[in-house]
Length: 133
Image 1 (cartoon, one colour):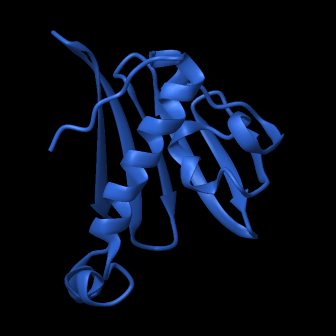
Image 2 (tube, one colour):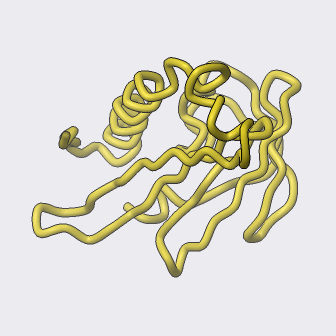
């Protein structure tokens, strides 16, 4: 499962070739360059930085000036656990204002994104996925 979550291919990608960390962009064409641990992705003209550390079991996307989303793969007695985390990278007053401005509604979109990640992962691996609260 780690490969399905942590693999980032370069080139012009669409559909199931889009890395799982960007699964919310499956309907978009994504251009990815760079590697092997740090990549640049362009989605609808917006640049993102993708980073991965397979040994530590994570991949992340950073965008805009405040946002970082990370997927972590962990062993679990029931199989494999996929953890999604969102970080506010802004500091100072800007960082405190993010939840009330550009970050407003982000928690719901993050949960929706995790549901989408699980659905995409289940399709790619032909396996059952389960959302844990």
